[in-house]
Image (cartoon, rainbow over all chains, first blue to last red; front, side, top):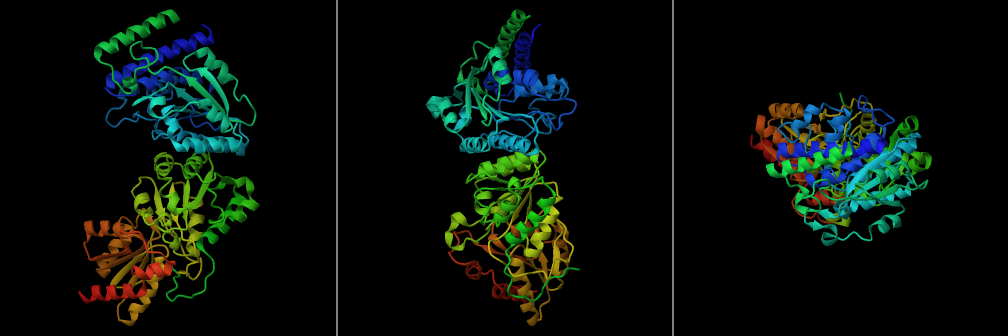
Length: 276
Length: 322
């Protein structure tokens, strides 16, 4: 199996895992976790230097999930990579678990507690700046939501990253076009979105965020311009992988019914067969 | 024993921010991980010289207080020791969610120095007063809260904080305050209150710039035959409950005095302890629930009864009623 095929298959397995977690827990951010699965899969299984046996390794690449609510894909991946036992996924959102509904740095592999939107980019700027100060070559990756872009602190961080020429910083926008109330353009329009980031001094790249091959190509080639932080507009489909959840706003945190769960798992199993 | 100065020797010209910046510069020269992080606030924080001498150890984020604290937390998560310095009014309000989540909840080693605190910006109005900062920071789990009494304590506090691997909010005022200590020659421990003066009739508990008022009041009360204990509660959290309960037990009545709203600050903290373990009378002196009147610190303090005369009157009342 070549790398691309492996990553595609892995992403489908992660989708099945996260859907099962949400179904069993009776809670979760289904749509967003499905839209960001491919991005996280490419980061964790192909791009980032991370060692599950030494999660605090000084030279590791950092990942800060600013859209903290879409955490299920993240938990599924960290468990699969061996940061903690897979068995623990069953405790997701249950009493006294550490696998709560947002990233939690009591879990090995998680850098920072997030959940309040607009925090991840400033934190990542600090991490990237520290790498520059120490002459270290690690990269910092942060994933933001598109609805999150209305937070003013995102743009404070954007200015600082360009000012300090942080070409070791890669911000990825999960541009699924939907937030809880409806489309981002109806709630608070973002377009011309890439142009805004360009104007803030970032190198902007647009990609199909559910296309593993495109993600691999783009992420392998950052930074695209020395001295500039990279912004990847990853156009994704909220609810990706499950036909009846795709692009439906209510799946933001809709928990599948028994029938929906079975149908979804069938769909994903079929995808897995094709990917074999 | 402490070396508290019971009698005020007027004339100190060195503000706490100046004392802090000098000691930070000294320590940062030896440890390149010590950084200061500012929001166009290096002038107000007396850190211009720091920036000149150690340009690679000062991080400027511009007027962006949310980013200020977020960046500091990312630096701390990567092994740095950032000291954030920004006006207390903005730092404790505009950045409060970053303080709660990125610093306290994530447990990053960030020291937050709120400068020009309380009513330092006397005539600039409520936007620039920070009279709620102790209440809000005190309620955040994982965050310690401190306020030095004078330049000597400010210096000792910073020296201790460099070795203290926990999130801390520290508030100082803008202008020089009269010394409460004769020198730096005393033991300072985070979370351990300093008994500045022993006494058996009543205890005044103060923090920050009001420690001087408490000492002066105790001296005035001596003339009235009242033996007043003075406690400097430089660490508001974790609170030295032992010293409070000892004072309640041994003196039977307590006055608290603080440059903060009467809600949620030092007085509240003391009352929480006393009311649950040894409910002796407590009088809380602070600023009332209104936008504070304009004026210089001394004028504002006088207006709201944060004065030797008022403390004296209340103490006589309380002791007389024994």
